[in-house]
Amino acid sequence: MGDGVECHGHQTYDTPKSVKSHGISSCSNAKPTAFSDVVYNTAIAHLDQNNHKHQDWFDDNDEYIQQLLDEKHEAFRSLQQDTTSASKKAAYNSIKRKMQTMLREMQDSWATIKADEIQKCVDSNNFKCFYNALKTIYGPPATGTSPLVSAIRSTLLTDKNAILKRWAEHFINVLNRPSSINADVTNHHQHLTGRTSKGIIG
Image (tube, rainbow, N blue to C red; front, side, top):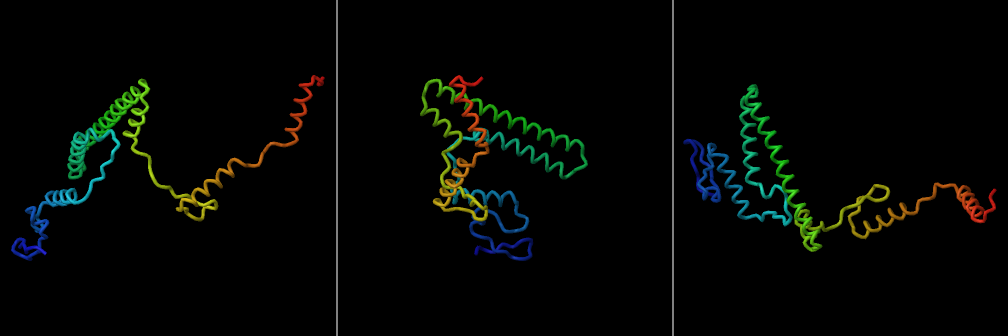
């Protein structure tokens, strides 16, 4: 426990050392934004970030996208404070349309650039470059085995051998379905074909 902090001359609360070290008291009037910053910075400092190796169209535009989101959130908060205001509603709808348009343009531009990069790899017959470009965009292949439902759909199969056996059963059933063609029709067709080849139909 940390040192006690008196709030408004009333009850004394214990302030955790990790929070106190950032200059924030446990009083009820402490700014929520300051506290959230402490939580975020502490999490970043002690937890690993999930950094992916493949690229996404929004990675190169994070800061600008965040600016658009901040504008949209601010317009939304303003509208919530006065829901009857036509001007605030129009401003919110405007920034929302602007954001949607800009995001689509960013995505299209990024996709066009990546397509050009891949095409250059193909034109130069550089397949290593081609597959590396695909891997950069889509990421490495997923590992692991997806669960599968049994044939009678009563059990979820998670064991690798059981899943392989179930797939084998599935393809055996697909590839060995009973014929829906009448055997007599087939035999008659073969008989006519044979007589035609001998030139005895007439």
